[in-house]
Amino acid sequence: MLLSRSATYGLRAVLYLSIHSHKDERFGIKVIAKELSLPESYLGKVLQNLVRKRIISSTKGPRGGFYIKDECLNKPVIKIVEAIDGLERFSACGLGLHECSDENPCSIHKEYGALREGLFKLLSKKTIRDFKEDIENGKAVLSI
Image (cartoon, rainbow, N blue to C red; front, top):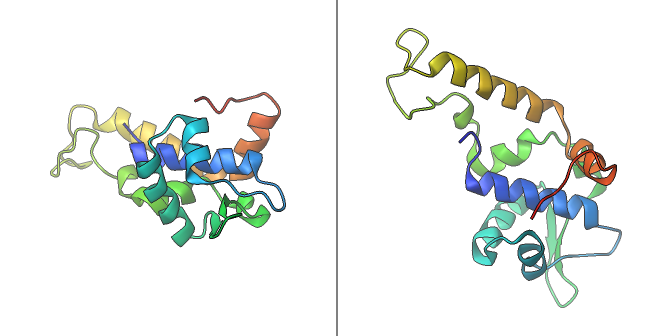
């Protein structure tokens, strides 16, 4: 799998926030986890990491929760993956072999490399706003 479970959860949560965040609206972890059918404690750790990396924001208190600032919608989606997993997945062997390289390829090296490169280019080119607008315009879904 090219994206980890954590990165997938983070991406889904960021897209959820991008669609539902308005001026003063904040979403608690319970709401986000329930809406996306994700494990609350696991998602909480992912979201705190995204707050530390300034992809999303949070406030504490009775009216607190998670939200995304408008300017963060212009960040490329790859920043979410990078914040959670780093970028090593985009250079690692698809079979997990440490000795795999262009000079010493595994059996799926060439094809897997093309997939990795394609996904990296897509996530680098597309912004959070692009994905948000695709969902809002019915061109994509944020499935639960």
